[in-house]
Image 1 (cartoon, rainbow, N blue to C red):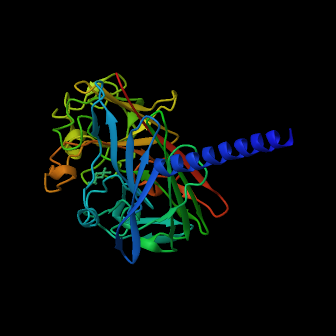
Image 2: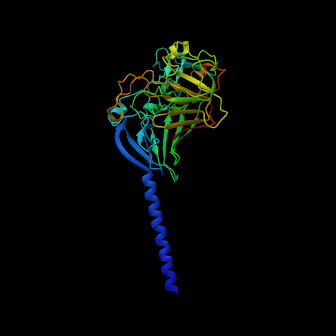
Image 3: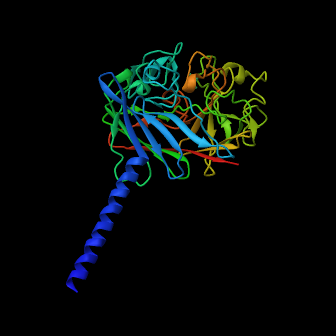
Length: 376
Ligand code: GAL
């Protein structure tokens, strides 16, 4: 009797052990971490995240970037739909922010100047008369720390960074934590958490370029857009907001109902001429769960964007010129990728009438953006 009990207990223990091993093998399979080089004295890794559907995304701690999003079309054919590079060498050469986290201030600050509590701060000018995307040494170019994703049951990548006081001219030591979760529903969930020890400004985003035909497979002019925004942010000739929040109604900026990117992009409308296409922040109505959708009718791929942020910068790759050769040796030509960069409006530190981008010591900035992929 006792021996039978002992045998059963042994069998149960063995089964539990096997299942635990299997579970940890599964966990390992979900996230593969490879060392691909060193940069600025730090190791650069490529993380491959595989969800239960067998779809993969790849990320790197260089700029906390998304470099690969492989999702099926309506016939199940998988293709990478975001811009990136095949080699470490081409990745670190510099590019227009492909897939990276952008900070400390995404988009432009006029003349690189802002004032906090009577103190004027000066930033590096890297875009004509203005400062763009946190400056030349912004977070897109940093080698972030790659943290352990913990016990998460879905594949995650966690990147952290310490941005020192006065880095690129911004006050305050800032701690930044970015968690990418790749759900079984083909959603990239991005969670940002930031704290500072001095009053500062913050506008953090992800700058992924998307082409739902597959990155490098033609332009994005046939992509059908919906942006749930009744107003947008007009800009001057240096792409700095004028201060106006203009109703989209009756303009080529009305994407409250579906329109392709290309339908009105060539119209003789002042804001399209200034932006060389769409390169504007849309003021999100924030009334429904989904804030923007992109549908590409040939493949049937659909991308939905969900954010808690007040705006989204819709950029149609107007500055791409084919000089960047990406995955598979494909050139990224004019308007072959579009960005939906969630965040605050450009130059908010100089526009008190815009939602505030201030972060104080003792406060924790938390924000979430989701890119969800499906077919229809
Ligand atoms: C976008 C910005 C564009 C351009 C691009 C990078 O976020 O709106 O004007 O600077 O980044 O090339």
